[in-house]
Length: 350
Image 1 (cartoon, helix red, strand yellow):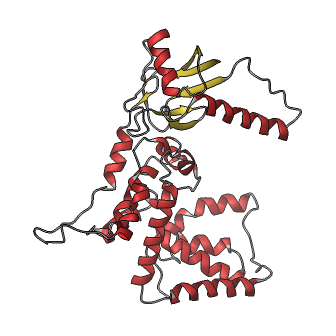
Image 2: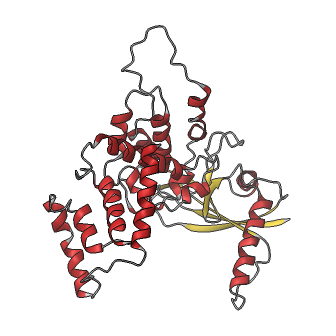
Image 3: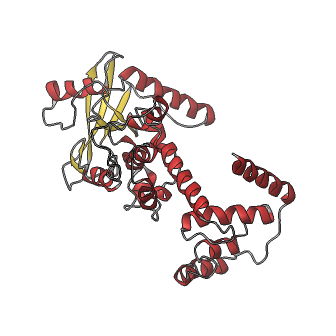
């Protein structure tokens, strides 16, 4: 069948443009097979990365019709079927739309996002590797001086590492990460998925230090916006966002166990965020926005810099009439409080 491939091309520090190539292909041909044919038969100047062709190395990650994927894994037939399914869904929801069917199926291929383009589909992955290095993705056994002995693990302990161990560092999650797009300090879902592998490994001797590091501002786990894009595009089912959630829970659990005084205010803003949210919902059924910012950002007036940082936002809210002058508890507050307390009691007993 005839398929039109639209490839987004670009040289370093120049404007991108789209170039079209038409091929006669089989449904089972992979996108990488088609790119190879384009390069060998039509345009030898086209640049892209490839290596194993077997979904092992992760080299051929690129954006295929708007989502990051491995070119060696996706085939023409399944990609066209996916596009047709999307088009049918749009037509069903918007029957009066002027959507026209292309004369032949079209597949658009572009370089990965969140990384500068070197040439065509080849991107500079320096920030990807630097952020991976920043989480120190190596097991540390420096505190255990046991000569001539292996650090053995039970099957159950090893099984905890299987999912994150499947990561092939293809960059698909990093490419589609919304948090990384708006926050250049965020290390990225790939790094935090690897970070959880270290946290979950019972042989590691630096778990406490790691959790402190991953808890820092929006560079670590609290920078994740929970958009689920990383889970959706991961070709190896690593589910990076799920691993980020596990690190968050480890941080919260350790913080809770360290604090002997239940009335003490947690020093970490991220932990304070969770604690204050639960307290306010228990008290009023939903969140009192006036107190939430002061307690979380201002640490109940202990952090004056945080309090003053709220002033511009507060003034804009007042000017636009969006600052709540009073707070009214929601209906069913007692039931909400009872449910939360039941869950807390069950967790403490566990």
